[in-house]
Image (cartoon, rainbow, N blue to C red; front, side, top):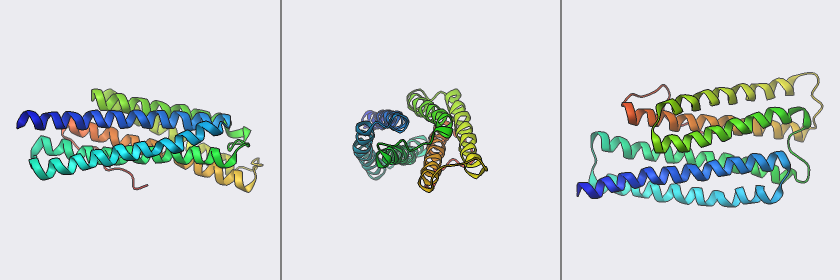
Length: 221
C-alpha cells in the first residue's frame, strides 16, 4: 500500500512539472505574439489554455482522492496540500498568459504596446519567461537557489511594472486612451504572473524545509 501511495505522490510531482512546462510555453508564445503582432500565435495560446485547465482539474481530483482514501499525515499531507496550492497558482499563470495573448489578438493588426514602451515590455517578457522556466526546473529539482532567483526576477517585474506607470503618468505620454488601457492591463498581467510564480517557489521551500515563507499563500488574482 505504501508503494502505491508513494507512486501517487511522485505522479503529483510529475503532473506539476508538466503543467508548469505548458505555462512556460504559453507565456513565451504570448510575449512573442504581443511583440510581433502574430495573430495565429496569440490564438494558439488562447486555445491551449484549456489544456492547462484540464491538467489542474485532473491533478486536483487526484489530490482529493488521496486525501479521502489515504488520509495522509505529516509530510505526506504537506505534499498533497502543497500540490493543490501550486496547481492553482500555475493555472492562474496560464490564465495571465492567455490574457496577454487576448490583448495581442484584440489589437491586431496594430501592436498593443506603443513604441516608447516596447523596450520595457521586452524586458518584462524576458523576465517572465525566466520565471516560468525556473519554476518548471524548480518543481523537478527542488533547488532552493532557483527559488531565490524566481524572487529576484519577480522584483524586476515589479520594478518594470512601476516603470509603465511612470511612463503613463509622465507629461510625455502621447498614447491613445485604448493604448493607455492596454499598457495598464499588460503591466498588471506580467506583474501578477511573477507573484504567482513566487507563491509556487515559496511552497517548494516549504516542502523542502518545513518552514513557511512570508505570505506563502497564492495571490488572490
